[in-house]
Length: 236
Ligand code: DX5
Ligand code: ZN
Picture 1 (cartoon, protein in one colour):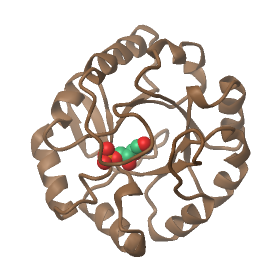
Picture 2: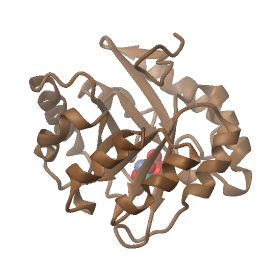
Picture 3: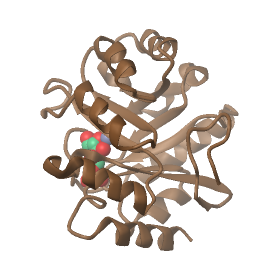
């Protein structure tokens, strides 16, 4: 399917009547070969790229900022989304928009003024998302559903790639799906991030997730082409 008005995505995989998206996180890529790895993942079937930005305060790790986004923008035409694990996310939005970012997700726990920040993302012409860490209740998004395009349910504690999926997340994903359905928020995608592999993706999809961030699984030892094949097989 080719991208149509209203969506940034090509949506090649579907399950239970829902279009699913795979979003490789470059956090686990080899940064010395980043362009090459991104091209490989795009050819293998990535729908978009997930860029984890960390400030050493909201999470105990540091990654990269807008200059890397500018570089990636030249390497792929696929949509780019930022997952901001930073305090004061409002400080970085103009630079992200100028660098070519299409979607920005902020943590509900990282800002006192979530409504304001989401409004600012929209005003800069980007799509907005809200991320929830494992202990944050799903109801945190209730009053901003009309301002966002996605909710990101973290299935590990944010900060590092390569962690194990938290089993309780399955219940939380189902609760978020129920909340979105009750609210009639069919425009909001339900993304999951952390510990997603070919071995658990079908189970996670059946709880209601429709967008899957995958870092270490895609940029690990197994060639990413075979990982995408395994993912498609698990979801078929
Ligand atoms: C963790 C990040 C994730 C991470 C996922 O804070 O938000 O996007 O890259 O990596 P894996 O898939 O290895 O758990
Ligand atoms: Zn992430």
